[in-house]
Length: 287
Length: 274
Image 1 (cartoon, chains in turn orange, green):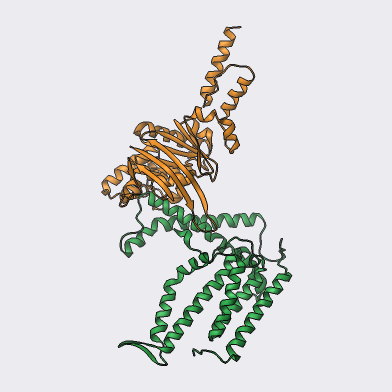
Image 2 (cartoon, one colour):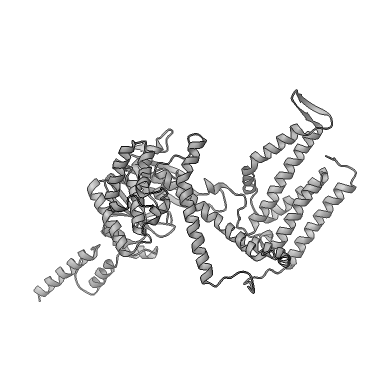
């Protein structure tokens, strides 16, 4: 169970004045169950990349294997791929259309050809997974707050019970609390269900806390790929392409430069705090 | 998928046609279109071909791109040609299919009609390819200004036009996005009969309308907060001013018009269709 991309190239509007080479020779493999972050500046190709994962965009060249099967071969069942790889677009609340939230969440499972009863079970399950309050189930999706709309929209994809969940900037336009809530919920979801989660973001801070692997995209190519610590150790290179490591990385490096012997690979504030207090304690003890 | 429609699009390039004043392009295009419909001689069309060819060449828009725009109207073209071919009567009968017959006049009308329509589409798309929507509406507003005297709200109409044009690419992009999002949720837009397909459009149209209203609201708010209140006393940052090149372009158009007129009327070798 994995997704494997081999030498994927994608060119928008080939042959016109607006031609754009959006992906350049991207190869990577994502095993089942991994929590991956894809990070990159606007226009780095991250959104284009994820639209390949469920076959919405077909690569100009290269191959994509899902569970070992080439999805570009003739008669590959794209519909089944799309129900296994759930894609939550940026501002997913803009796709809500039904008269009430519950019916809207049922749209995905209904398209999978499930019975009405099964659809409802799944919709309820999905809404619970994203922590959507039950009293709003029968409300029009257009009357909800921004955060609730987004939850409903994410539930709309989860109701299809995908094996891979791809989220494109799920926190864009939310306030800090809404952002943390959604991300915590996604992390919890990953823990509970064991599905592969691919989180696209342009904020290192957001991603660092949750994911086990970071893929950095730059100008259509894969620039870095590894565990967060490993990726953040390249913080100078990240800066050059307009990205930055989390602030704690800078603090730790700054401390080290000034002669305090701390480990520099902390990725979260909590880790850094522990490391600093541990080191200070150690230094005091040796004075 | 939706991106493939090239008709009415702007093609960014640096050419003398792109640099022309929009008013020149509008007036010349209009005159060219009229010339297509008043002339009916082979030599007149030859002149139109030379003129159009020259403009395309000078505009630096690739021919491939222009031809692609014709694809959208292929059905209409075929329909017109077939209708003309079978339903126009007159002259010698060339082929007889019992119910229908093709006459000499019918064939001629069909061919000329096809050429007319193709030139008409190419001619007007050259204007949109080389002029930004904003420049186009500026030109329109300036040309129609005399109508202000008859209480026609020229500025308001022009503003509406430029807003409408401005939003076409945005709404296309939005449609593309919503379509993709619904396909990702398993929506099937391609199969089924006409009723099923129409029903399948609901998940796309509802969000699209909601977003259009939201954008309209935001835009109105943004305009009001910048104290926009219509055309009165409003001055332009870049007023339209004719330059030497623009007068020359007018001259070329006039020469073309005279040429078609003379060729159609006074040169003895001609093929009348009517």
